[in-house]
Image (cartoon, rainbow, N blue to C red; front, side):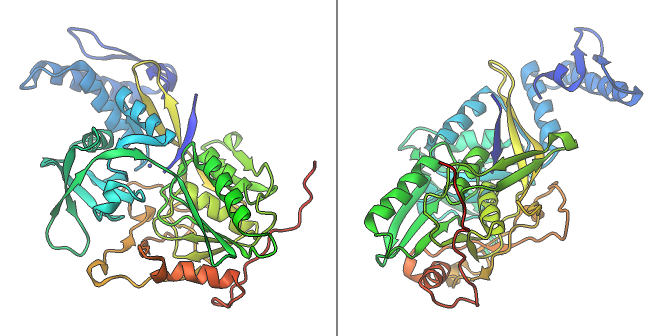
Length: 442
């Protein structure tokens, strides 16, 4: 079953090619619909494959050569397409289910190094001070250069209570430095919430996994139990430093605040591949005002949610410009023992037709945080537009946005701006719109 994954093949015959490898001769290829150039390139691949098998200083394993070739082909497409072998595919399924062993860190690959998208709240990585934008150059003293993303992630995962050492390169620091982290069982609770002042519900979504929608529904219900409807001024939905996740969960989250209307459309290479996803289920908050917080670490599924609620005039956005990851990766299982492919198959667009790719979402009210001296110059996320090989924007590209969130709420300027706005205060002349009046059929 295919799943659309937002964050960052079938078989060889599935792409119109049948490859035959002979024991003593070059690779032979039959292309079902290819010209002479394709034949020539396939013959070149076969010749290199056979040359490596016969002449490399140590006898290589055929399976590793093929896996390496697939990795090279897929990773050359864009920063988010990748091949996962059987083990990596299993681990990804565990991650999306919300529980796994490791450090609690969302990463991507950039220029051969592992780049931190965001640490997950209350995990070993977050507690150790790992920041969005950090580059991991070594894991337990072994260079990351040359490893695939899955290989690097596998090295960081491990049994609870075991330690790993990461070598970090951080913008603003002259020298790499080491961070020792003790692994834990990571139980990602994607939704956290509390009430503020007896009149506002605060809900933070840290990722979009299979538990997100249920967690959100519980949060809304609990807030409404604690605050009577006549005293409930509204909700703050915090999506800052949320790296994304499952597309269906993003649609369900929007549906919790919007009774009807388009949430997102995805457009592939061919016009007939366009898909539209609409809200369903009804507004659980009964039209209460809503503020959404975003920043440079808000990516992918987070941007879908923020963009949809903004375009439908359901929410006011406060914070800094989002990451700008506007592409969809479809997870394509390749059969028993063969792993899966995460392949970029479409761009996504907000209900107004805006592409977020390499542009991001600009908030209605920009609020910059006061950054501690030791983090100044290192609190910005470079964004999608800075990633090598990214899909080009349809308009002007933007890169770099503040992603620092103060650990103490009393110092959180964006959060206090949201509270002030919901309580009727002026914030840069912004007005929080109530939910549009809608008739929902019984």
